[in-house]
Length: 323
Ligand code: PAF
Image 1: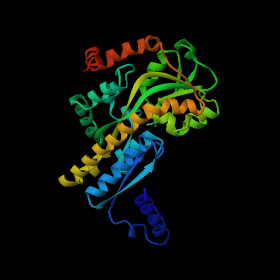
Image 2: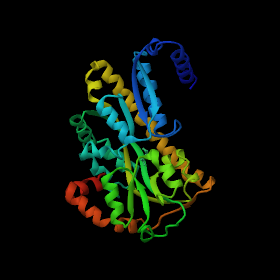
Image 3: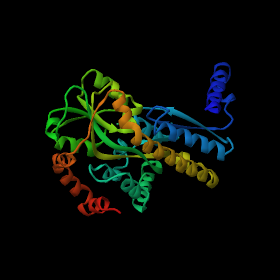
């Protein structure tokens, strides 16, 4: 942390007095993520920075920036205005439609199941699809299982969500699933969510524990329901032109850094899952265990029937039954 502080302090002093390039010794590589520094995304980005700089002996100067709009981040990577981004796959299906299959609700039993699929040849094949869209899918990461939160109105069962405005990610599969449950899905970038909750434009939202914790959602929402209705994968992407410009040796450095970044990300998710609910209760959130998850599954079943047609019933069965 001291090294980081020093790096950015020196950078800003020099930037103020000299030409921007004067201080930067390494080639700048920008990576963005969408959460606090002290979060499952923040620690992953810092690990990426640390490993790239160490292995390349500072040939690369990795600059970590926060960008809460994940769609914008992916667009910038695709256009080459930033080198890499990491975050949830929420809006990524709009760029690489094949990966939408991973967004189907109630697809994965638990973290081991989801990681098993992502780390297998199924995950590798899906990462390959990024190339045709001008990006390299470096590694699968993890946002976590998503849970519903609401402000004023308490939800006892899925029938209570009918007619509620729930913010979703800009993700067609999620929107369709919530619509089937009678919700008015309201997609928006994460950057717009706090004000939408404060102003009552939406009645609730859904996100994993690491996001609810790091984003201090206890200050924005009264109730948290442990619905685990869908697993939210993450991905680290880099621009194809950037990638093609690297030597084989440097590619290996970025790949090793990406792997280290996944480790940091997953272990932070695990830590947040272990202590997060208790912490949110301590901060005053009313947390409801959900004993009727099947009822949510039932409420979304017409959408899931459509997903079976869209992605193939056999494909979804294989993913669901993965051991
Ligand atoms: O809800 C979202 O948009 C995502 O889960 C978030 C918070 C940007 C984390 O990746």
